[in-house]
Each structure stands twice: as C-alpha cells, then as structure tokens.
Image 1 (tube, rainbow, N blue to C red):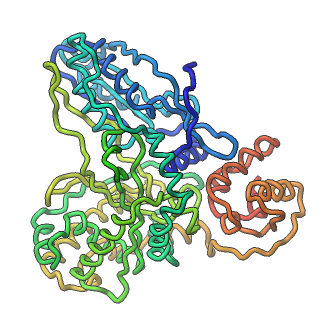
Image 2: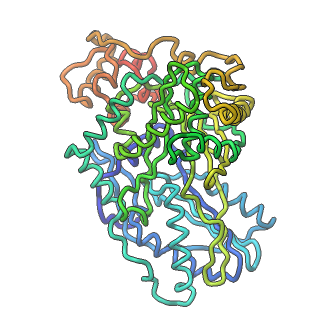
Image 3: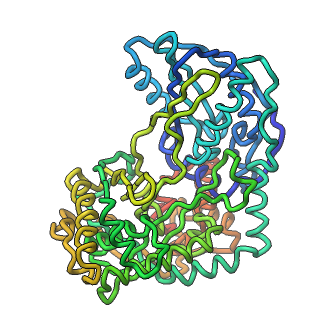
Length: 537
C-alpha cells in the first residue's frame, strides 16, 4: 500500500460525505466524472505522465478519509504514477461511451482509495475516450475544469519529452483550506454569518411536497426528469421591468420556481437550496477539491405578493446569502436542528442550480482535439432539483425528481409550470402569484405530503426522562450518554434535541456494532428516541 504522508482535519463537507457513505456504502451517488473525447494522434504514455503530474500537484487526489477517534480526518498518501492501458473497444464511439459510463457508476471506498480512477478506451487509431472519475469528497464540478485545463497544458511538453514544471506552483492545498475552515469556526470568525442564518431560518418548517406515492424506508435515489428551457425573451422582459438593474436570469427563474413551489405545496414559507462555489479566496480557484456549499435561501410569499415584488425579494435574499456564504451547510443543520427524515436532506428539500463553471466545448493540445462529454445521468441528491446551464438570458436543463416519491407526469408538469408562470409574469409582472397560471397547482396530490405520510404525527417530542426497561434500552442509554457526554438520558429524549448530530449518530452505530448490536443506520440518522430505536432492533 502507498505510504501515508500526512493526517489532517477533514473539511465539513468531507465529514458529511463520509457520514453519507456510512449510511449507504457502495453508492456511486457522489461520483464526479468527465469523459474526454480525444481526436488525433495520441501518445498514451504522455497522457499518463500528464495525469500523474496533476495527481502529484493536488494532494487531495491522493487522499482518503478515515475515522480517527471521534474525528473524520484526511490521510494524504505518497505520489504514485498513473498507469494507463489502452483498451480497444468494439462497437465504435457509442460502445466506448457506454463503457465509460459504467466506469462512472462504480463506487469508491473512502477509506481505502484511491478516490480517482482513469481509463483510456481506443475507438479507432486516432480516436480515444479518456474517462476520469473522482469522488465528490475530493473534487467538485469546478475541479473538473481545473483537471482539463492542467491536462491540456501538461500534455504537449509530456509528448515532447520535456519537463512538466510548466504550471504555476500551487500556493495552498485543499487540506490547508480544511484546516483554515475549522480554525475560523473554532475561533468564532463565522459567528456573525451564523447569526445571519439563524435569523433567516428561524422557525423554518420543511416543504411538504405532495408525493405521488408513499415513500419507502431507504431512497434508491433513482430519478425522473423532464427538460426545461425557460424562454430567454420572458427572462429578458422581467429583468427589464425590475427596478434594480442587477437582477440576474437565475433570480428570475428562482422567483418563478418559488411561485410554483408555493402553489404546489400550499405553503407561503419556501426554502430553496442554492449551490455556492465556495472559492472565496483567489488562491483556491486553481485547486481541485470539494469547496461547493449549499445556501438555504428562504422566501416569504405570505400576503400573496405580486411577481415583481417577489422578484425584488429574491434579489435581496440572494445578495444577503452571497454575503454570508462561509457557514458550511453541515454546521447549519447541526446548529438549527431542523426536522429530520431518514434518507432526506434536512433544511432544504429542493435545489435550484445554474452551472456557470461548465467545461469548455473543445480544447487543443499538441495536435489533439479534446471534447468533454458528460458521463453521469441526472442524480437526485434532493427530492426536487432544477438544474440549468447557459449564459446570459439563455438557460436550459432539466427538473430532476426522486423516483421513489414522484412519477414522470409530475416532472413534466413541474417543468411546464415554471415556464407557464414565467409566461404569465412577463405578460403581467404586477399580477399576484396566486393569479399566475400553474398547471401543477391544479392537480390534486395522489398521497399526503411526504413528511406527513412518513410520520403521521409531528416529529418533535418532549423529553420525559423515563428510565430504560429493556436490555437494549439500557445499552442505548449508555451509548448515548457516552457519545453526548452527559450523565443520563431518558428513553423518550430525542437524540438531536439532546445535543446529537450526524457524526455522533454514526458513532452510536459504530460503538453498538463493536458490542454486537447492529442498529438501523437510516433510523439513527432520522429523528428518534431510545425507545423507538430499541423497538427497531
């Protein structure tokens, strides 16, 4: 095995992904992948040398995640050469693409690594497909662009047999960011930002998205999706009538999406997750790593505002969120202790993303034409996601829904409803949101909202301090007290209300496993009491 060089703190985002890996091991849900279609005369050894240099430069690509005591840590390993074997593929480019997509679905082991894999598939003498797959714990979407940029710069000197020290030396590594992030939190530098989010999200309730079917115990993260292309003319018109000149196309679509969510759920309090690149320092921009953060944007549609007023509120809330972007989503969840449901994202059930860091269409390197191609299908990290791409007012993409909750008809209606709301608002920006046509709102839900269907009762329970009465309850009481660092707990105390968090929940599972008791991880990570957990064992 490769020698371990350093043991360093994991970032908050890495801690969350490690926890999710414990919930659902052997999943490809958090893989990031890009295929590079290479046309021209290729030197495979030069490509391997260029890729080796990339992995050498970025320590995070040689990193695994382990549990050390009560903390998740990064273990950085020594460099090793990237070895590429040219694999001939019969069936042409489509067959090679299918094989690369199968590679992108193979899971990683966060503790064993490596967390990057490459394959070089030969379609013809001068056509290859180079597949690069990494785990999200060590790379995000921005990172794929960094990888392509560095490969493009390093391949020509590698093909000429020259030295590869052609790129500027990296000023920091991802582990430096993780340590800096932890230091800022420990020293209170993020307190003001945390206070902002506490105020913004006070007494926030989850969206009760009307599901098409009763959810099962463990989501399979399958998807249904529908194309979405908001008309550029409507976006342009709404930006023009907004009094503030810096209303972006994203803000216009977000206002329309919030309108649809409010009409669909019947709720006036709407939270939508927004991805934030997280590279707030210039020296972080050329790094590979997991920097992206989720900002839970809360919008108030009470009083039935007109669309133009809602759009102005969206702009104000977005600017406020972007000025307070550094509190990790995981910290917000642990601090605010929102209602939890097994397998579902707390605090924000839905996300709206506009990708403005997409890969270039093509690149050139030493006679090679490099064309990035997508390998991954839509993935459902949230119950509902709107994922768009584009520039200026021209956006296109899809709505993606978790298939264990929703069917294809709902996906189609959701996409159509966003466009319909935009059409109505562009014709009459002063119309109240309740007056805008919304096809999804006119359809009755097949089953109650997912939260009510899963629980049938409010999630929060008051602690009673009742004593354990069974062997399992006694065991769990002792484990809880140990992990929560308290003297006693009652069997009706709720774990998260008593000071628990996701990492402590996984520690309970692991300690119980050491004592010969296998706890249902999904239930442990949802809201629960000792009595409820003991009954499930």
